[in-house]
Length: 137
Image (cartoon, rainbow, N blue to C red; front, side):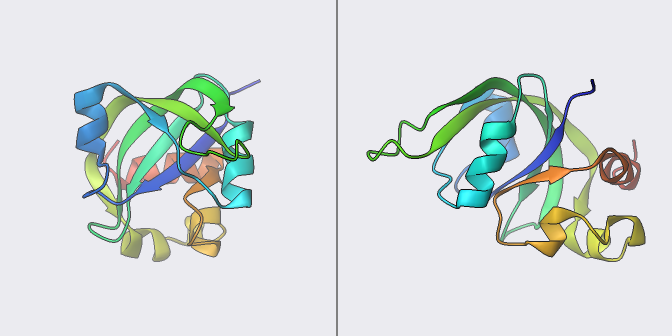
């Protein structure tokens, strides 16, 4: 069975892909949307993750992977939500902008484009390959 693929969003002034590269690994916490939290619970170690800069830049900029599966979110005093740990894999050759993604028919059904408010969403194998092709490999 192949690993699942995901997309996570972060505002670069809060936590950018460069921060993840610098840190090597981080706890991905603070997700409070129930649908996004279910996606965190579904993540498995070594799943691949697209890292998207939201608000500023608005582009997929890097690839990460799940380094640790879901555990209680340390930032949630009610202990209702989970976090995962992500590790940096590599920056994309060229960022793939939201405008490029929206203009690409192969990405029309991508969860991130259909449910733009979700901070964590699944990515199909075909969508993953399309994003990497748009990024220049």
